[in-house]
Image (cartoon, rainbow, N blue to C red; front, side):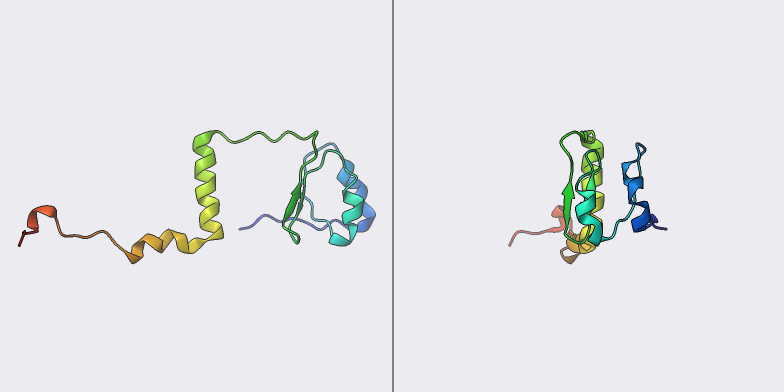
Length: 101
């Protein structure tokens, strides 16, 4: 299942000023109206940018969780990385069975 992100109709753009956390989609034609929001993090999925206002502090994840998250996101972005090592599997020949010639 996936997260549902509703697109906010133009008549409800004032909802973006509410003091509660939310994830809402806004059509790109309203981009100029969303730039004025002081404490809202804006992720422009079409443009590939993210705007984090100076007044918003986003703390880093603790190191073990940060590394796990990076690895998981890496697999989402490049799923072929998960099987890349299978191109050269480790040898099943043990060192004791090798003979010097």
